[in-house]
Length: 299
Image (cartoon, rainbow, N blue to C red):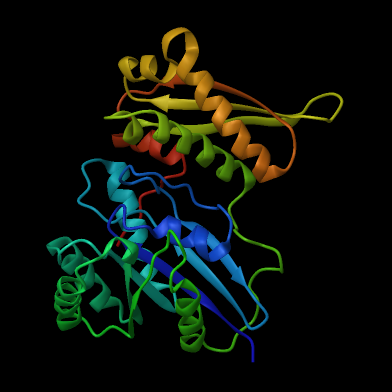
């Protein structure tokens, strides 16, 4: 019997949702960083084996938004719970029970979708008594279908979790062909890799203020190199100065690091050209949000 279904991964920022997705797929599909709200879009990861196809949806961290972009991100995450077969509600093992997580559980109660509680970053824990106390508080508030302790970083118990997800899913067809790992286009993955390098190399207000666009992709005349032109959008001239760096040093470093990952992704030589421009307060302006693919949704 072949099983299939859709599984959404939700939780606060920085609980390891994207790291988990990459661990499941055994390759990098979602970008990761130690900056909150790294994930801005719904990212589909397709797990395949001989007995099942599981379509995982990595979502932005649910948080109290300060911008229209933030509102979009949290809403898009919550909206996935209404259309999937299972919700993985992920928390950090090292944190005490939080009011913010109880607020998320209230939203899950309304959806009536089965929920697994996923306690991630088990590798950071030494005081298991304290961990159990916090888990018991969540279990007292919500009837989870299962509770799992994992480490998305090193893969601990991830295979066991996959097997339990299969048990819950019903018999169904393959929604995607063999070999597919995501339904996101190549241009999306490339711009995310560029954004990841900005997150890694910059600090303070820069990570939240950037957007990356792919302006063109074409082969050179000899068809031996993929030429990619991209733009990093920021909100203020001072941010642009940081992105460019002294004599263009930061922009060059971003481009060099991104090109390595892009070449690994598309398995082809790449010439990457990156520009930077200012679009003032773009995260709060619906015109820009729609142009960049962030269309407000109603809960």
